Length: 239
Image 1 (cartoon, rainbow, N blue to C red):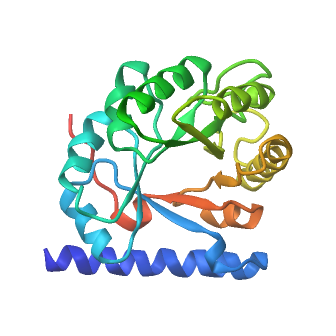
Image 2 (tube, rainbow, N blue to C red; image 1 turned 30 degrees about the vertical axis):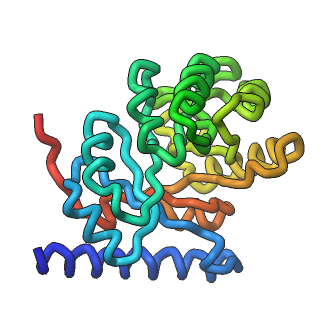
């Protein structure tokens, strides 16, 4: 256990150095960027160690993994982010532990999240997932709404009881005009964020960048980066 905690501490320190260097290169303050550690496939014991090492934001992408892990860590001072594609039949469970859902991409999901947030007496933060590989009125390969659908979804979210519109999220696309051009993709997201904030000034969060491209995200202006492998290592999936 001690060995694992030392490994996590060293990895966290390395990621912290990367973020700090990227902020310096971009002329930004380190405090402007929040690290979210993506703990998918890793056990609650790792989450506990990360909390002891100062991590305050963790993310999961599958409810069947996240729900028991969050339940085992209720005593920790953590904010839980749900970052995966979310089916409406999982919404009740996710609302039970997620402080923020980063993958809102359709009106049906907004309705379901709002209903369950009200039922649970909670306010759930939401990010609109933007698909930069989608046509104007399509959805992306890995979820997300096309840029042309942001305004309508944002208005719906902003007026939904129990929900709070916090901003935008994207995953660097594998296809389309931004494939292999992470910096350009994240700069496009920042442009869309600026546009969104004209109508919704409080929606300031921009979640972009992962282990391989966090520097590009910080350079573009992201407020949050989602890092898994660089902190936790490579773990083979079971089943």
